[in-house]
Image 1 (cartoon, rainbow, N blue to C red):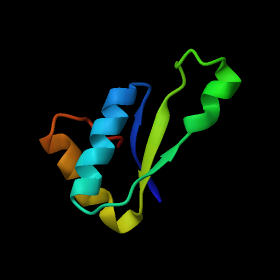
Image 2 (image 1 turned 135 degrees about the vertical axis):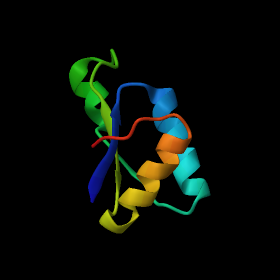
Image 3 (image 1 turned 90 degrees about the vertical axis):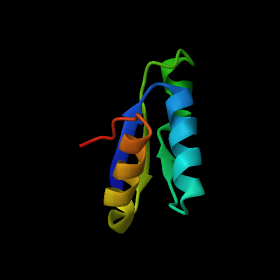
Image 4 (image 1 turned 90 degrees about the horizontal axis):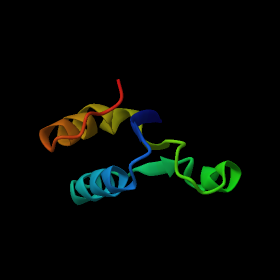
Length: 71
């Protein structure tokens, strides 16, 4: 798996997931439950992961829709 996006913005995560799932690309969200450790203040970023073979296409989809993917 490769990291596709890292952000603390929950709306960007939701938008990216909707875009990718609409294109048939499965995404896995990591660090969702870190808010328990941080005290629910939302400062730790979440990561979206995709399988290696989908990374190039997924990054292109995000860029086309105004989201800067992780490098």
